[in-house]
Image 1 (cartoon, rainbow, N blue to C red):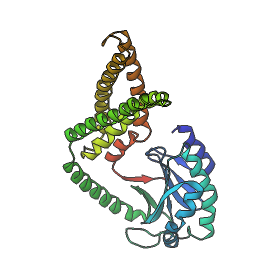
Image 2: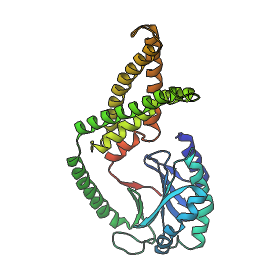
Image 3: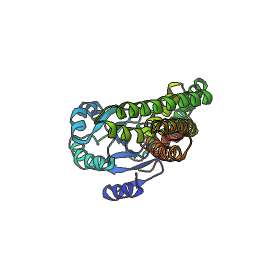
Length: 308
């Protein structure tokens, strides 16, 4: 997602663009818009207890109007997750313009409870973004709450890493990438043998790299590979091996089918095209559904102070 989209939204709603979130106040509500996992935007809105009680019931209407996929209320805020869209910030902007005045009219911005002491926050406040919650705390409650959140995150992270393996993840990614490649080329071969579908077979074959990328990530996670900053690197390495191996096999099959020498000019031409298209499809597969931000987010300590 382009940086200018965040800048435009920040100017329209008088928000601040931070490293982890775009944050500020809209209609008296402290809120943050996550900058992780571009294309699946999350909006976290601090609300009164009445607002938290009523927010989840809005999901059917918000899903139809703005593509909101999930609403969760807890702590001091409600989180609104948006379905993947070509321009997710456009839907988030429409949500802020249309819904925040409605929330304010219901009085959901009148009072915020501190999750640490469970008392109303009046006057000066501190704001913490922890996972998918925006928390409003008293200044003297923020420190203890943040330390407890960090300790809980580190304990959970240690348990997760103890169950995961980088080697097992690479093996799973390699097997998944091979399965994706076989499915892509298998569909290409079958369709090329059916009249009227041979052109579609070529299209499917050219897109096989996308299936390789999906298979690599799916296999990595299915084998409980380690969710660290090297997760994408392991999946890319496995996908590269699968693309090279299956491209060579497919090029040999295509050359042999036309009666050309096994490793002659036609083989090399097919190989070059398949490697290019496979690599291009794999890049799209890595960037779009599984952006590398997931790796960094997995290691990010999730307690972040915001200036609102």
